[in-house]
Amino acid sequence: MWRGTYAPPTALMSRSINATIDALWRMEAPKIIGALARLVRDVGLAEELAQDALVAALQQWPEEGIPAKPAAWLMMTAKRRAIDRFRRDRMMREKNREVARELDAREDVSTAMIEAHLDDDIGDERLALIFAACHPELGREARAALTLRLLGGLTPPEIARAFLASETTIQQRIVRAKKTLRDADVQFEVPHGKGRNERLAAVLEVVYLIFNEGYSATSGSDWMRPQLCGEAQRLGRILAELMPEETEVLGLLSLMELQASRLGARVDAEGNPILLGDQNRARWDRLLIRRGLAALDRASAISKGPGGPYQVQAAIAACHARAAAPEDTDWLKIAALYAALMQQTPSPVIELNRAVAISMALGPEHGLAIVDDLVEEPALKSYHLLPAVRGDLLEKLGRMPEAAAEFERAADLAANDREKQMLRERARAARGMLN
Image 1: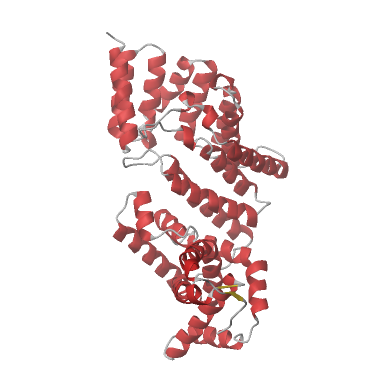
Image 2 (image 1 turned 60 degrees about the vertical axis):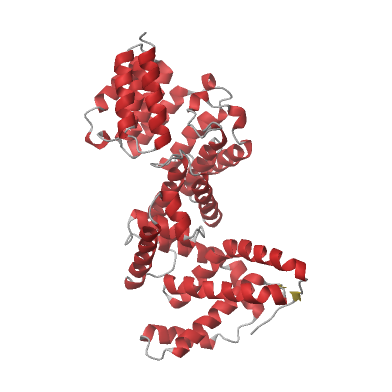
């Protein structure tokens, strides 16, 4: 086995070496799995080979020290595990025999060449892995689970806790997703032309799905799951690094950074929700705001216009981020941006958000007129935020019995325990104002 230059550990260093391996694995695993997937053409096998290399590192490095080029060591070890596996089973299909011969032919590759590959071409490997995990052959839930597993490094139990699903369900989704990719003989490459644009939309959708589930959990006892937000932001930063000219990538990154800047102000000490207008803006993360605004500025400079849906949503988030106090918010601009978003991606949810902006800019009666037109919208029949918004507007107009009824209806539809509790409290407060 190849060996680089080692820094021999002392007995006291063993524990810290294991911690270093854990951190290194989190950073390098997507790169290594992506590179292996291209070689063996099977993401499940690639992940297994990478895990074998990790086990070897956990066994050897505490005694021998960390290699000078740890990522190259892991890649070389995984590659040789692949060679051994294909040699052991001469009855494997021809594709695997071809891969084995290809790997054998490269067995004398130098350490310097492997390290150069990891450094110079690694962006393509990670990007190819993201596009593979978000392949259209997979459903949205499977894409999200596989993306978090391969790119986020989360374990099935962690993903299960994040989405409030059983560990068995998550494991089955991941296993089925890997089998689907293998059976479809998916190429672990970044698609080009029209195919790339179509696939990029799916990639961004999955990343934003992960972020939104962390930002406003659909169910459970916690209103937010910040770990999911962090993973989505990390994926967004990787995409922006690898695709710096894609304005929608920059728009999504900006949107996530700006929304994540509010996480520390969105709940009180007991974990109860705090609505936007009541948040302590001094607790908003200024670093994330700067990052978000910078990404939006880059996207705007490239697109030379309002850009696509994520860029427009980021512009809306920027209006909130730039307002030092709620009364400083440019609600007319936000309403105009929602109108532009409706032109790009018509949706009753976007129209509901535009109604809120109109109510803040022109008065609750103007917003209520728009909301009343949405009451019979089939797509919003079970959407708890429709009666929640209507209750808020009715309350501002002093129509307390109607407001209380709307808040109760919203609470019945809400699946998140914290949100349900908040809506019931608003209903009780509205009824209390009648006395």
